Length: 294
Image (tube, rainbow, N blue to C red; front, side):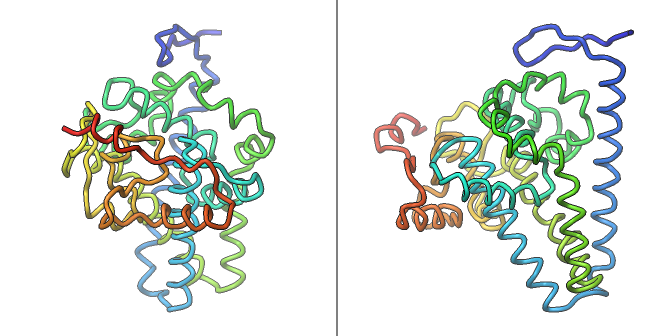
């Protein structure tokens, strides 16, 4: 079988079969179709507005974005900045699955590659390749991602667990299931606001961290990358927008390091710690902060 040669992030030459190439292109088309459908639904949102649908969408934004992506995918699974009982870890990760940004294995692998090769040619989504590429275009280039992030050994901690392998194989079914549930509960208003509006909002606030979060803002810490603290992002992302803080102390459970830097997931982590459910919570020491000061 004819092959195309690619390289993984470690520079090792690999073979990519035509079958793999076609599969990657098929995912590109699916992602593009999903993205278009997601945004077309926004056109109908005003016509189907109801306060019930609005609050359903708002609650789902918090569960899937603030808890699912920020607290679970990002701080707990990717950076291991605190520990949770498995039942709670799995529940929060399931919330993150419904953000429609990929299953935990995919998301964590991509994000760990991002930190390992931040703002270099091996970074999966750096604005050095263009603002819009870092914001969303990278999602539609699976072959390109395979070249940069072919080696998924950086996520063996998740791949070794049957639960995360199950989510990886079935993640699309869960989205369809939630869509049907919302439709049966509240018809088109709940479907459009609970899926289209909610997913579009979560998608863009998280994707803005890759683009705007590495383009505009302040840099109080010497991170040797393009990460910025951006107060607008800090507000709309519930606390993820203090992005220079995060790249300076990537294993910290707290990203809003100043008292005035809003960080909703951190407040929830502290509450869980108070209950004895979050353990080994990591934050930067004063010595670590002094070392990173510009």
